[in-house]
Image 1 (cartoon, rainbow, N blue to C red):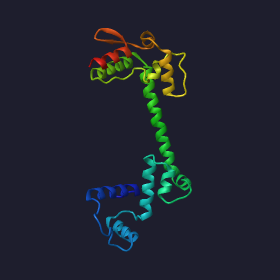
Image 2: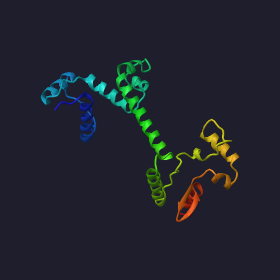
Image 3: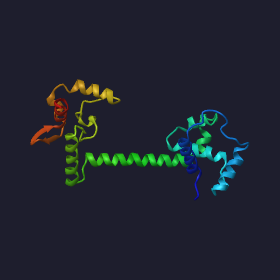
Image 4: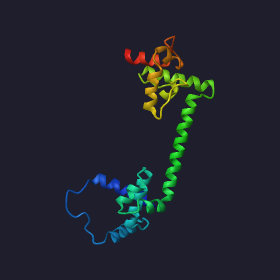
Length: 204
C-alpha cells in the first residue's frame, strides 16, 4: 500500500485520537525524529517521508479547509503576510477557488430552477415539495428570498436591513403586502403565500 503525505498525516491524526494525549513526560524516546520516521516508513514499506512532509500536508489541509494564507503564514513563523504560502501552494489555492466557484454556480442553478421551473413537471414537483414541508411546519418561500416579495418600485437601500426598513415605510397595509405574493392552494382554498404561512405559524 502506498500512501501520500496528506494520507499518512490523517492516519497519524486518527491514531493519536484513538490512543489519547500523553498526560506528561517525553513524547518520543528517540534522538532523531527524521531518522526514526525514515526507519518506520522503511519497515512499513511506505515511501520515505520527512518531518517537512507533515508540515506541507498540514498546510495543504488548512488551505483546503478555507484557512487564510495569512493566518497559516503566521502559524509557520513567516513574516511575509502569506506571500510564500500563496506562491508555494498556488495549486491548492487554485483548486479550492475552482471548487468554490463550481459550488456557487451549482447553488445559483438550483435556485434558478426553483424560481423559474423549466416545465410543468418541475413546477408540480416543487409545489408538492413545498406542501409536504408546510405539513411538517417547515416554511420555505417559493420565490426564494424575502426581498423577492418586495414591490418592484419604491424599495431602496444599500443592504438588507435598510431595504427592510424602507419596505416597512412603503408597504403599510395587508393588501399591499399580499399583492406581491403567489397564490397557494391549501385545503381547497386559495391563499396569498405570506398570509398562509403566517396563519399556519401562529395557529399551530
